[in-house]
Image (cartoon, rainbow, N blue to C red; front, top):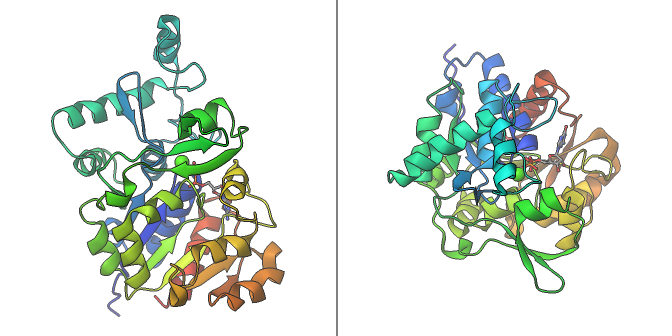
Length: 328
Ligand code: GDP
Ligand code: CA
């Protein structure tokens, strides 16, 4: 039997996104696919990006790259395995950078390489393509856009701070009024993004933070349009299990945009493609079984399945369920 590889596109943020992308790659391998890089494209959030101490950081891009390469720190959840912080310590002695924002030494090597190539005139897409060649990632990674549209948190009193300062320094404790990505309304998708989504057999929305990870990706107008109109089914995976965010502080982000921390409310926030949204189907955790009618009432097909990404096998099972839900 000749098996035709499904073309899979995943929209993803950092840690939740990378666990899921590992699962998709594993699910494709289990289907007997050797060259998963030809089948799997990941469109990564760049809203988390920031200039710090003269270097360009791309936290979500790096989380996914490191996870696919198998060099990520799985215990801590971010950065490189076995990293040290000598340079970070030295930066603090100089009073440079942010004392609350840890930059690992190996991680800084990534940022220096990236910044050098950006300064040489490469686009973020070209830099990521180059960085993707170091390890056999088994996926093609694309930034959502080449434009710098770093997420800004606007507080109730009108003050503005970079998302990373709000998230890491203040641990999301300052109530946000809204999130903005200045310039995103005119930002073009990175080269290859539209083609990948338009020609995909399935588009998967990873169980990532709906507001600050998936939100910016879908706020690039042309990306939202192509997700809404592609012939491929669009299947989302709930990042909320039993009314909780599993890990992290995504609930604060949801509250700020007026969305309840519930799997059904997040599905409704994404919306059904029949009514101008981006979803055809939504994977709900077993704990949220009772929410299935609410999701269906919004015109979104729901499937109940275990959603804990405890290891690659569990993530692969979720990804396989999503592929089957999409009919591929
Ligand atoms: P970040 O960019 O590093 O914050 O990571 P993402 O935005 O990609 O993902 C963060 C979200 O992943 C969290 O808010 C959780 O809701 C979700 N998440 C983390 N672990 C799991 C898991 O095991 N299962 C599910 N369904 N969601 C998870
Ligand atoms: Ca992130």
